[in-house]
Amino acid sequence: MEELILIAKGAEADLLLDPDWNGVKALIKRRGEKRYRHPELDREIRRQRTIHEASIIHRAKGAGVPTPVIYQVDPDDATIVMEFVEGERVRDIVECLPGEERRRLFKVIGVMAGRLHRASIIHGDLTTSNIINTAEGPVFVDFGLGEVSSETEKRGVDLNLMHRMLTSTHFRHTEELFAAFEKGYRESLGEEAEEALERMEEISRRGRYIERE
Amino acid sequence: MDVLTCLGIESTADNLGVGIASSDGRILANEITTHVPEEGGIHPREAARHHADVVGDTISRALATAGITSRDLDFIAFAQGPGLGPCLRTGATAARALSSYLKVPLVGVNHCVAHIEIGRLTEDAVDPLTLYVSGGNTIVTGYEAGRYRVFGETLDIAVGNCLDVFARAAELPYPGGPAVEELALKGEKLIPLPYVVKGMDLSYSGLLTAAMGELRKAEHSLEDICFSLQETAYGMLGEVTERALAHTGKGELLLTGGVGANKRLRSMISLIAEEHGAAAKFVPIRYATDNGAMIAWTGVVAYMSGVRTPVESSFIDSRWRLDEVEVPWRS
Image (tube, rainbow over all chains, first blue to last red; front, side, top):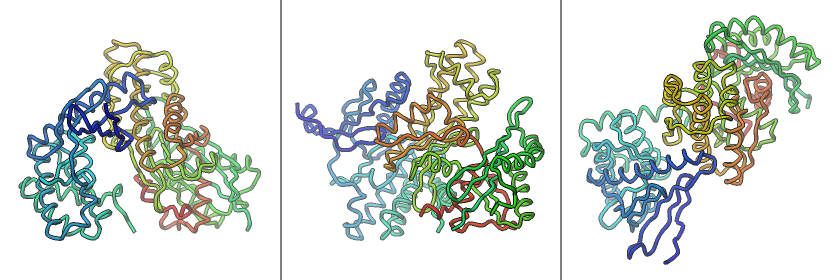
């Protein structure tokens, strides 16, 4: 057996790369134990979140949003084995893409976000770090904070996070990228998009998120 | 430079506190008078009446403890928010009166900022991630670019409120938190209760409802319910705190607020700090509960960096958010 390679160590879970998982390259997401929590409670939380995340990834596919293929879910070990998506994080390539391609990509991302919301899926961490650009187009990853809901407030929070990301990290192209995103989002979500976008504006004005100079 | 002396008045909830601090970092007095309701929780009007009755005496006691007279005060600080309106107004009125009578400046202080600043002073913390848990607040915060940023907070009721209301329903003696803690020591069975963490935020209202439901059903012992309530409530705090600590990479973890006296919560905080290579720091209860010393000390640091609150803008703000406050003394 080849060694697992630690890709990322998060507060919630570790990401490991298995170069040869039954013949394929696979990503293993494992929610580690939390010593501070009561062991029984800890096991139950990790178990539930593992099942929940896998089911949301699955649900997203049904909505027409590309997500990693799930190979195996082991709730007792709090582990999901999934496809290792080959590509680059959108966050890392935005600045290098030519203008036309950049806008096209963000329109597609907007369409996908609209599809998620239309299927009552909230991503929970909708940033350009969690979208991988592949030869076949963007793939959405990390639904660890995802939930099933069609509340306008939650949609607004998703959108606000994307908008903040574009403002802080991709500040050179904030407006054109968000305009492209918005166009795609409206296209796939229809009338409900207006409400969600308005809520996003409102959320960004609340004290919690605002950056007053 | 001369050493300046500040008197601070705290009156955001059931405590009326008067503290005196000096600009060389000494706490000269910290007098607290608590309003204990005859029944039920804090009634804002009753608590305010109590504060108005005792504020004069408490100020005199603080001055006597410090061994100074009112003429030695260089400025007056008061908790301007957040908190219960009538209570805040009582403290603010006393502060304005003192300031105009003594002809010294007035400094409005944010209660949550004060909890952090007194912890930094007494525990020698430089730049901690702070978990502030009490009957009215549940906040995970740390300094970042000019302000104390809120990384996580409760979406509904505070963790201390959840424990207090539960304790009253279980007819446990006042104060509720320690009573629940004592019973929890004898509990061992974990009853499933709602564990609600949404991203970085927490929710305690569902947990309270479920725990009260268990109380009514009486299928489990009170000890087991208290144990499960604590494990769930503090497990949630641990998760959000750990995430914020990992995210900010800060080297100190400061626990403050009345709930911070809980031993189980302290042990969780120690474990989390240890795993992330941070130092766990616990603010002693007399400075962790609502008190006047923290207002006086924060008044000092604010005053030294030029903050003044003219009477005409000294209105209280019962919803004044921690992350709206500029903290120039940290930059």
